[in-house]
Image (tube, rainbow, N blue to C red; front, side, top):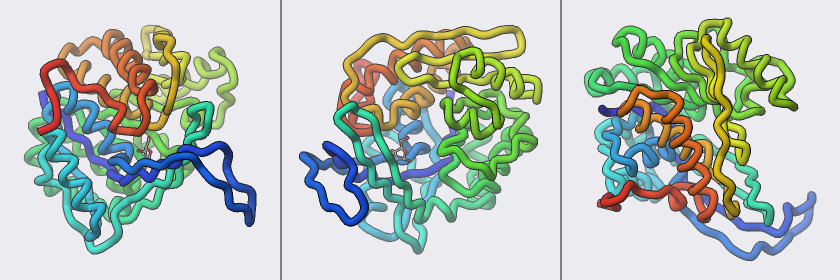
Length: 300
Ligand code: RIB
């Protein structure tokens, strides 16, 4: 049951800080780590570590970060056939994690900005073998739309994670997706509606369901996730954990959800598994470094 991920990869440069510097100020931070990230790659790696075959469609640059990322895909059992080298810098993400485990992220897309609709087309034969296409917004919007229409042409359900939030995203062009998985701020931008209470969030998901999206799954951080669909809704609580670093928790949820859903077709149990897996990931530092492997699996 393969999963296609058409999306980004980045190298995460993570500083664990006491506080952000003010303008013109230099502050010392206690520690730093570098690891592989990018929303597309994170979701792909989580799904692969849990046992999915992943078809990754992505672009790396022509620098040392590209080698790191390609090796990382291979170590995680992900084929790099459709991960293309590009005459550009690789995507990088300086990340700042504060003492409360909250993160602030800057992304420099680099080669990710050159992943084209034609790249999706070139991977058509392998995408056609997949049971789900997973997308995010760290690649050009036209490439996202092309992957959605390819899913429609091939009869493959599409999961869209509208992250990072983008005012460019055209709701009319994504109503065919099977799963839309925003967090609260992405939901707010997409609908133009407030999301300060669960009641607000429900009203905003209603708008998306009425527009034709089959399933809206809103990730709520430590509160879990709300699954809304035409026949009702389910609020799934996240297990209580001591959070150390929340970076990439949403991607952990999506990678795990995708793997669980293609195996069982059961949305509710896949949301539950995703919430558990994401909660577990925040107890460890880093992005992909915090993602667990399924029992009996490990780096290649
Ligand atoms: O969602 C977390 C990810 O966002 C990080 O890995 C960073 O690379 C950015 O893409």
